[in-house]
Every structure is written in structure tokens, then in C-alpha cells.
Image (cartoon, rainbow, N blue to C red; front, side, top):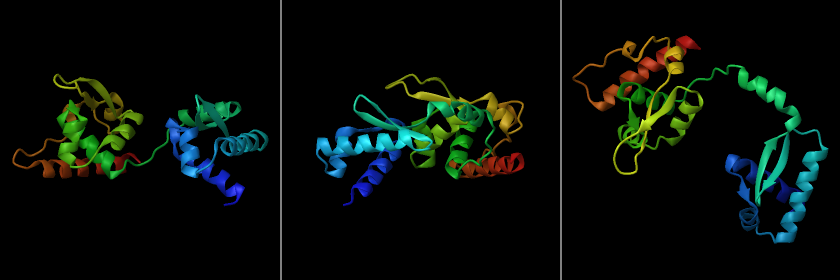
Length: 193
């Protein structure tokens, strides 16, 4: 394989590792490279990032590699964070949000039992969007985190309190509750966007 191809794969692996980064030994193992060759190629990548007009730089901390933004561009990232980005919530995030809104306080395990699928990613999205937050811990084994909605949730959906959520009929099952709540939040989201 060509050296430039190997560097491109390295770059992709480092990028794909996200905030966790990738340990140098794992990078060497995936690419089947010896230590000297891997270090040489990483030095070349670092040099290219430092000397080209690029928005990223290659960082290393305790043998773990990360792609990060350049500090000299920080003012633009601050402006970006301050800009309200209105993107629609995914179906999974809407389902999770509906369950939390109606059944709060609730644990991730309880949410997953209702949805029937893992809900870690939708929970992360909702926490990042400040629509839900950790509101405590449930008594019992492991003391799992309890989630509830936030003031931002109320503002986002134009509600003055959680009591303003439309009541769910008493004679429906959990699947119908989820479908009703999804429909409600989808309509509100469409109105707000």
C-alpha cells in the first residue's frame, strides 16, 4: 500500500475515534505497522497539519491521538456555539423525549424497556440539546441515573409547565402512548422550525 494511502487511513481512524482518541499501539495494530514506521508517518501527518492551511491539528496525549481544531480559530467556534442551530430531532430522540416527558423521572434502562432498543445515543443528543438532564439517582442496585425534562424543553415546545402536555387516554397500551407522544412532539417540532 502507498505511504499516502496509509496516512489517509491513519487520519480517518484518528478522526473516527472522536473524543476518545486512538492509542498509538491500536493504530499500529490496525495498520500492521512497526513502531518506527508508525511514528514516522504520524510525524509527517503532524507536519502537514502544522504547515498547511488546515482547520485541524494532530494532538497526542499519553500515547493517545486526537484530531482537534486549531486554537487560533477559537473565536469562530465560540460564535458558532452561540448561534442557535435548529435541526430536527431524530425519530429515536423524539421517542426518547416523549417517554421522558410523560414518565419522568425515568432511568435509561426503563426507557430502553419501553422502546425495545438501546437509547444511549438519543439520550446524549437530548442532553446536548439541553432538553433533558440528570435529576438524581434511583435507589437500588447500581443507583442508575434518573432523567427529566428541562426548562429549555418547556421553552422549545412552547409549554409553561409539564402539566401542559396533552393527557394520554387511560385505556391505551405503552406502544400507543409512545405513538401519541411522538405525533405530538413531531407536530410541535414542525411548528417550531
